[in-house]
Amino acid sequence: MRKKSCVRFFTFLLCVIVFFEMGICPGSALVSFSNPHYLRHATALEPESLRLHQGLFESFEEGFGVWEPDASTPLPWFVTRTEEKAHTGTWSINMTADGHFDDGTVWIVREICIPEGTWTLGVDFFFWSEGSQFNNWEVFAYIGLLRPEIEADFTCIGHAGIQGWSPYNYSTTIQVDHDTTGWVAIGINIVWETWRTHYFDSVTITGLPQIHQKNWWE
Image (cartoon, rainbow, N blue to C red):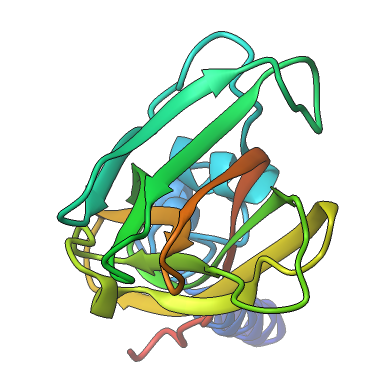
Protein backbone atom coordinates (compact mmCIF):
# COMPACT_ATOMS: atom_id res chain seq x y z
CA MET A 1 0.00 0.00 0.00
CA ARG A 2 2.82 2.34 0.95
CA LYS A 3 4.56 1.50 -2.36
CA LYS A 4 1.46 2.50 -4.38
CA SER A 5 1.18 5.78 -2.47
CA CYS A 6 4.81 6.60 -3.24
CA VAL A 7 4.27 5.86 -6.92
CA ARG A 8 1.19 8.08 -7.01
CA PHE A 9 3.01 10.88 -5.21
CA PHE A 10 5.98 10.84 -7.59
CA THR A 11 3.64 10.63 -10.59
CA PHE A 12 1.76 13.70 -9.34
CA LEU A 13 5.05 15.53 -8.69
CA LEU A 14 6.27 14.73 -12.20
CA CYS A 15 3.02 16.10 -13.71
CA VAL A 16 3.37 19.33 -11.73
CA ILE A 17 6.94 19.80 -12.95
CA VAL A 18 5.90 19.20 -16.56
CA PHE A 19 3.00 21.65 -16.25
CA PHE A 20 5.24 24.37 -14.87
CA GLU A 21 7.82 23.86 -17.60
CA MET A 22 5.06 24.23 -20.22
CA GLY A 23 3.73 27.39 -18.63
CA ILE A 24 0.49 25.79 -17.39
CA CYS A 25 -0.54 26.39 -13.81
CA PRO A 26 -2.06 23.38 -12.02
CA GLY A 27 -5.83 23.48 -12.23
CA SER A 28 -5.90 25.63 -15.40
CA ALA A 29 -7.38 24.46 -18.68
CA LEU A 30 -5.20 23.37 -21.55
CA VAL A 31 -6.30 26.46 -23.51
CA SER A 32 -3.64 28.27 -21.48
CA PHE A 33 -1.38 27.43 -24.42
CA SER A 34 -2.97 30.40 -26.19
CA ASN A 35 -1.87 32.72 -23.40
CA PRO A 36 0.49 35.44 -24.74
CA HIS A 37 3.01 34.49 -22.05
CA TYR A 38 3.76 31.27 -23.90
CA LEU A 39 3.30 30.67 -27.62
CA ARG A 40 1.73 33.99 -28.64
CA HIS A 41 3.77 34.79 -31.75
CA ALA A 42 5.36 31.40 -32.24
CA THR A 43 2.07 29.96 -33.45
CA ALA A 44 1.12 33.13 -35.36
CA LEU A 45 -2.56 32.40 -34.83
CA GLU A 46 -3.53 36.08 -34.74
CA PRO A 47 -4.68 37.27 -38.21
CA GLU A 48 -2.42 40.33 -38.28
CA SER A 49 0.62 38.32 -37.17
CA LEU A 50 -0.05 35.85 -39.94
CA ARG A 51 -0.52 38.65 -42.49
CA LEU A 52 2.80 40.26 -41.55
CA HIS A 53 4.57 36.88 -41.74
CA GLN A 54 3.20 36.26 -45.22
CA GLY A 55 3.80 39.84 -46.40
CA LEU A 56 1.42 42.63 -47.40
CA PHE A 57 1.89 42.98 -51.16
CA GLU A 58 0.63 45.65 -53.54
CA SER A 59 1.28 46.09 -57.28
CA PHE A 60 -1.50 48.66 -57.86
CA GLU A 61 -3.28 46.58 -60.49
CA GLU A 62 -6.74 47.48 -59.22
CA GLY A 63 -6.18 50.88 -57.64
CA PHE A 64 -4.10 52.27 -54.80
CA GLY A 65 -5.27 49.55 -52.43
CA VAL A 66 -4.95 51.09 -48.96
CA TRP A 67 -2.07 53.36 -49.96
CA GLU A 68 -2.62 57.14 -49.99
CA PRO A 69 -0.64 59.91 -51.76
CA ASP A 70 0.82 62.66 -49.56
CA ALA A 71 3.47 65.37 -49.77
CA SER A 72 5.26 68.19 -48.03
CA THR A 73 6.24 70.66 -50.76
CA PRO A 74 5.25 74.23 -51.72
CA LEU A 75 5.17 73.45 -55.45
CA PRO A 76 2.94 71.26 -57.65
CA TRP A 77 3.14 67.49 -57.32
CA PHE A 78 1.02 64.51 -58.23
CA VAL A 79 0.85 60.77 -57.60
CA THR A 80 -1.15 58.64 -60.02
CA ARG A 81 -1.49 55.07 -61.24
CA THR A 82 -0.05 54.55 -64.68
CA GLU A 83 0.54 51.92 -67.36
CA GLU A 84 3.62 53.75 -68.68
CA LYS A 85 5.96 51.60 -66.57
CA ALA A 86 5.41 48.45 -64.54
CA HIS A 87 7.58 45.99 -62.66
CA THR A 88 4.77 43.56 -61.78
CA GLY A 89 1.64 43.35 -63.94
CA THR A 90 0.78 46.39 -66.04
CA TRP A 91 0.37 49.19 -63.47
CA SER A 92 2.66 51.17 -61.19
CA ILE A 93 2.72 54.47 -59.29
CA ASN A 94 3.85 57.62 -61.10
CA MET A 95 5.33 60.13 -58.65
CA THR A 96 6.05 63.53 -60.20
CA ALA A 97 7.03 66.83 -58.58
CA ASP A 98 8.25 70.32 -59.40
CA GLY A 99 11.65 70.77 -57.79
CA HIS A 100 12.32 74.40 -58.62
CA PHE A 101 12.54 75.39 -54.95
CA ASP A 102 15.02 72.53 -54.43
CA ASP A 103 12.85 71.41 -51.55
CA GLY A 104 10.02 69.00 -50.81
CA THR A 105 9.08 65.38 -50.26
CA VAL A 106 6.39 63.29 -52.00
CA TRP A 107 5.28 59.85 -50.84
CA ILE A 108 2.62 57.17 -50.56
CA VAL A 109 1.61 55.94 -47.12
CA ARG A 110 -0.53 53.22 -45.56
CA GLU A 111 -1.57 52.10 -42.10
CA ILE A 112 -0.76 48.65 -40.71
CA CYS A 113 -1.79 46.69 -37.62
CA ILE A 114 1.04 45.81 -35.24
CA PRO A 115 0.35 43.09 -32.67
CA GLU A 116 1.76 43.35 -29.17
CA GLY A 117 5.46 42.53 -28.92
CA THR A 118 8.76 43.41 -30.54
CA TRP A 119 8.74 43.36 -34.34
CA THR A 120 11.29 43.80 -37.08
CA LEU A 121 9.20 45.51 -39.76
CA GLY A 122 10.41 45.96 -43.32
CA VAL A 123 9.29 47.37 -46.64
CA ASP A 124 10.66 46.19 -50.00
CA PHE A 125 9.81 47.80 -53.33
CA PHE A 126 11.00 48.48 -56.86
CA PHE A 127 11.84 52.01 -57.99
CA TRP A 128 12.25 53.27 -61.55
CA SER A 129 14.49 56.16 -62.56
CA GLU A 130 15.67 57.48 -65.91
CA GLY A 131 19.18 57.46 -64.43
CA SER A 132 21.72 60.22 -64.03
CA GLN A 133 25.28 60.63 -62.85
CA PHE A 134 24.59 63.77 -60.80
CA ASN A 135 21.87 65.71 -58.96
CA ASN A 136 19.77 62.65 -58.24
CA TRP A 137 16.75 62.90 -55.98
CA GLU A 138 16.70 60.79 -52.84
CA VAL A 139 14.67 57.63 -52.24
CA PHE A 140 12.91 57.84 -48.86
CA ALA A 141 11.22 55.30 -46.57
CA TYR A 142 9.49 55.38 -43.21
CA ILE A 143 8.12 52.86 -40.69
CA GLY A 144 6.79 54.10 -37.36
CA LEU A 145 3.87 54.57 -35.01
CA LEU A 146 2.98 58.09 -36.17
CA ARG A 147 1.96 59.10 -39.67
CA PRO A 148 4.87 60.89 -41.40
CA GLU A 149 4.27 64.57 -42.09
CA ILE A 150 7.57 66.20 -43.08
CA GLU A 151 10.93 65.40 -44.70
CA ALA A 152 12.63 64.95 -41.31
CA ASP A 153 10.40 61.96 -40.52
CA PHE A 154 11.94 59.90 -43.33
CA THR A 155 15.17 57.95 -43.81
CA CYS A 156 17.15 58.25 -47.04
CA ILE A 157 17.82 54.72 -48.32
CA GLY A 158 19.37 55.56 -51.70
CA HIS A 159 19.53 57.88 -54.68
CA ALA A 160 17.73 57.77 -58.02
CA GLY A 161 20.87 57.34 -60.08
CA ILE A 162 20.37 53.88 -61.57
CA GLN A 163 18.51 53.64 -64.86
CA GLY A 164 15.47 51.38 -64.93
CA TRP A 165 13.97 49.31 -62.13
CA SER A 166 16.01 48.78 -58.96
CA PRO A 167 15.09 47.07 -55.65
CA TYR A 168 15.13 49.05 -52.42
CA ASN A 169 14.40 48.01 -48.86
CA TYR A 170 14.19 49.47 -45.39
CA SER A 171 13.62 47.88 -41.98
CA THR A 172 13.41 48.89 -38.34
CA THR A 173 12.51 47.38 -34.97
CA ILE A 174 9.39 48.49 -33.12
CA GLN A 175 8.26 47.41 -29.64
CA VAL A 176 4.67 47.87 -28.51
CA ASP A 177 3.06 46.75 -25.24
CA HIS A 178 -0.40 46.32 -26.81
CA ASP A 179 -1.94 45.78 -30.22
CA THR A 180 -1.78 49.05 -32.11
CA THR A 181 -1.43 50.63 -35.55
CA GLY A 182 1.59 51.97 -37.37
CA TRP A 183 2.47 53.59 -40.68
CA VAL A 184 4.66 52.68 -43.65
CA ALA A 185 5.64 55.16 -46.37
CA ILE A 186 7.94 55.31 -49.41
CA GLY A 187 8.71 58.26 -51.63
CA ILE A 188 11.12 60.74 -53.16
CA ASN A 189 12.91 63.78 -51.77
CA ILE A 190 13.64 66.76 -54.04
CA VAL A 191 17.30 67.79 -54.15
CA TRP A 192 17.54 69.46 -57.58
CA GLU A 193 15.64 72.32 -59.21
CA THR A 194 13.75 70.60 -62.00
CA TRP A 195 10.61 68.57 -62.75
CA ARG A 196 11.16 64.83 -62.35
CA THR A 197 9.11 61.66 -62.58
CA HIS A 198 9.81 58.35 -60.85
CA TYR A 199 7.84 55.12 -60.53
CA PHE A 200 7.15 52.72 -57.66
CA ASP A 201 5.87 49.14 -57.89
CA SER A 202 5.82 45.70 -56.22
CA VAL A 203 5.66 46.94 -52.62
CA THR A 204 5.85 44.33 -49.85
CA ILE A 205 5.59 44.93 -46.11
CA THR A 206 6.80 42.16 -43.79
CA GLY A 207 7.05 41.62 -40.06
CA LEU A 208 9.20 39.22 -38.07
CA PRO A 209 8.45 38.87 -34.34
CA GLN A 210 11.32 38.70 -31.89
CA ILE A 211 9.98 35.86 -29.78
CA HIS A 212 10.46 36.00 -26.04
CA GLN A 213 9.20 32.84 -24.34
CA LYS A 214 8.36 33.78 -20.79
CA ASN A 215 8.94 31.40 -17.93
CA TRP A 216 6.05 30.35 -15.70
CA TRP A 217 7.11 32.71 -12.91
CA GLU A 218 7.07 35.86 -15.11
